[in-house]
Amino acid sequence: MSQTSARIFALDPMTRGFGYAVFEEPFNLVAWGIARVKGDKHEGAIAQFRQLLTDFEPDVVVLEDAEDSASRRVNRIRELIKAMIVLARKRGIMVHSLARTAVVTCFDPLEKRATKYSIAARLAKDFPELLPALPKPRKPWESEHERMAIFDALALAVTFIMS
Image (cartoon, rainbow, N blue to C red; front, side, top):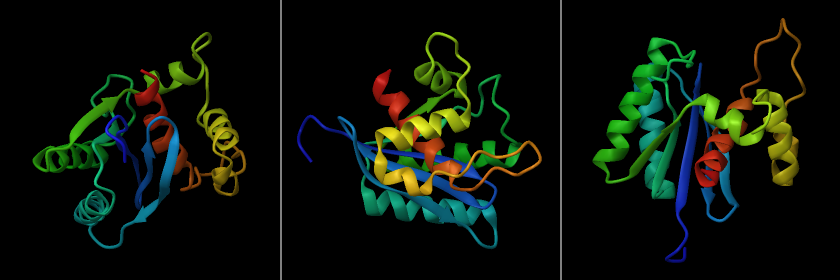
């Protein structure tokens, strides 16, 4: 890694773990995936997060701002995000929290109406290695596919770099 590039680790918590993307500036996707958790969701997610911090040695961790007034995160996820922030900072890693509205604005600056799927499709176009992971558009009665968390994490990383 050169002196001018930063390694960014972005993640998006979900019901059974979190999706993540590891990104190096200026637009190099290093790794992505889903960290699945069994058993205690909080402790399991923290353990996975700790291991990934060790594996990837990021300079910056980017998370959704769960305290933003527009955030729809449940209390369990809010507490998990807080614990991840504390852990990253204890390791000397810079942490940035971005509101979901900042992501939408980054991907649709004029109308601010980008959807999770439209953002994911754009990212899959810009990063063709992710195209096989792009879930099909969901019907209103379907649950969100867990792979969408990978795209949500990458959207946070891209928004961080673009801001």
